[in-house]
Image (tube, rainbow, N blue to C red):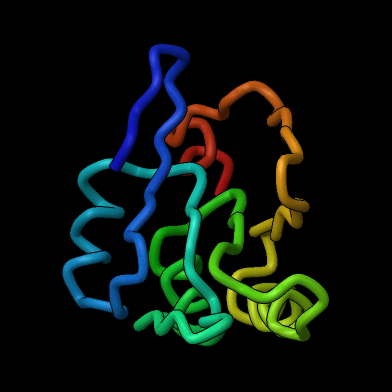
Length: 117
């Protein structure tokens, strides 16, 4: 779990498989952004996959997900976007290219999200 001075919280489990304790992390830290391995590539094995990443996005009620560990041009990103839309419709999948920088909108305080529901 990473927190910034501006109030952003990012969850990055590396290539860890899905664990029930991720629900507790979500309740404790309220991450806004998640970065998840969705596939292996060129002989590199990861323990997460598209369906696990989408489920964790749902559990954590993430605003955005950034996929990692996938082969450029592979189908995993499209699969992730579809599964996240189904499991967690308010979550955006942010697709990037190697070396690309992204700028995110100002952080939304989780209490504001909860109050709106």
